[in-house]
Length: 89
Image (cartoon, rainbow, N blue to C red):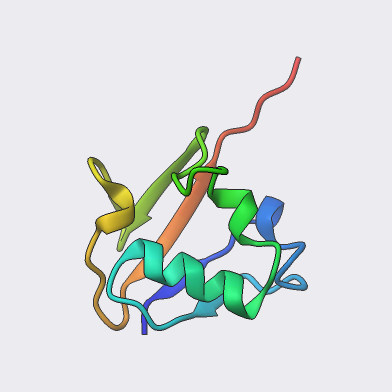
């Protein structure tokens, strides 16, 4: 199972869990799996059209994901990290 690393800003729906193991062949399937386990997580990372929200960078096993990130194939044991941008003023 891929492991989704949940950064602190996104841990509300997970009850503070920092990692979630989910079944899925792609990043989108895994994110849908996290949403199924923890309702409210999906809207934090996906927009109303089902695309990734801006201001986050995605990594698989330490490598930055580019292109059609949601279609990225995943293997059991892959670690997915979300690095969210911080803004302020």
